[in-house]
Image (cartoon, rainbow, N blue to C red; front, side, top):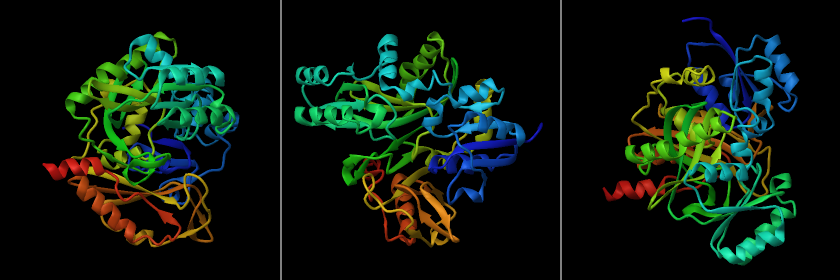
Length: 430
């Protein structure tokens, strides 16, 4: 089988807990570290305190601790070029270089790539001047979508129902509401359809499809209220059937991988496509250069293949060797967030009874914004817990997840009660 590997995962959220959960099951693993981790990751990995902005510190830790493989979880270190620094130090890494990470780090870069290589997406224009942006809005009419160009933690997207809302979004972004991310904006046509997420492992022109999922971004039931980092997700999603998945691969993912090679910045890692499934087919909303959160928590529970081997094969350009196996279950992740999220919320509120909630075999709880304080688990962020349930249908998975949530004692927490509502409505009709 060869040498077992020492692995370091970078990140602190539910995504990284889910990745560690999968990696920890691998026969290829010797020791697993996470930096910085959270209140739940210590059950599967050893936490280390490093500054991911200090690339040399990460490199030195890898050398000193015989780290064979580093997996970068969040987008910010990728856009900051950490993967480039690790490769320069001859350290095997999962995640794209700085140049390729622009596919998430700049919405304008992504849209221009689509325009150049005929990848289906919404019509758009880019602006760094508020007056010109507002002139375009007046010309285009509403509804439309206003996006901060840079990273804004999933919150820099405003769907404007009228011109006044669009103009307010422009003033907000250029006024610094999203920091440097809003120094340039992208204004897009409003696409009609159903959103879905799709994931593929990519190494240059080599691509291995994973699966689709459906995320629920708005904070309130019925997809109402402000956008969040994601309030829940389930996989598989009926809208991405075999025929639609083939179209996504042929029309969006493969052309993108080839386009990045032609641009001289081959992508290496996971491409996460946010899609709109329209009457005429799939269109790209945006790309992310890392696994989706909350999607990966559900995907990790469905995955029957060796998670570490998938990531390794990507990094070592062995994607043609992969045969990815999945459970037939539907898996749902319901996010528990702190009251007030995504605006203002309290930290350090105590959470208990997690052992009882996670006791059933089909329930796994991934921690996101938690920490250990005096032997207790307390909230340490906006999105705090991921309650993940596997079952034979979307409706049954939802029931199992919400039953588990009923067993959690956390007065300051809340969740959306309707994750998977579109798919459940489809099941009820059948």
